Length: 296
Image (cartoon, rainbow, N blue to C red; front, side):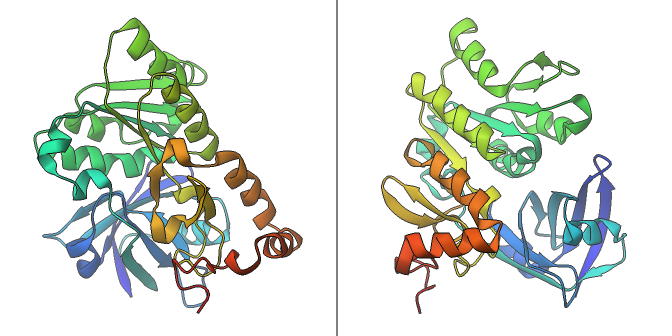
């Protein structure tokens, strides 16, 4: 059982929790995720690690109440416990594991959409702690859905806010801000990291490709089981079969087949759709590619 040490409502349906999980906190890195179960009968929920405190042994998660399991989680208060909290899972960000001196040479732009702001934060914070200031764009539908704004300002170089309805910051989409920064404000970037809804990441990549700006995307929105066994997060990257939870969740955005991934997400939601995918994909449907052990 894992203690909920802190709970904070960021919006009527978006909430933050600090969970006491010392072993996870000790070993996790930006870019990784955990799997949580509210109770013994609950479903497995993969959630990106949004922050961690190794001294206090806590891991921060942010999620939105949408289905039954996330509403159950939101109903819990400080002092309550969750059944399972497993991690860290997935691969850390390449920015964390790569040559720090090479990373220092790069001018990095992060593009965060909606809840994607939460997993962007630990990467920007880690860079800040290592003397690297990245620029950040946060996009949301409206002002009320902007999260982590104050925390992000403390660790980033420049923060740009944009909302679909113009209620806060610039009026428009994150893709327009990318173009404005490069074309109108003369900004130069060596790397873009985009995390958010699938459709946002797709159009972010279409935009950055025009400027030959290498872009990393996080495919955590398509994860279900989180271990490579269910096949839900199967996608094509550079013509090869990959699984977001085992091989990612971060990939080269220029190589991701977004249209295939989004169509697959729609099919996977129904039993009939899953049967069709199994027929189409054969032995690779549940990891038969040999990469994740799902074929064992």
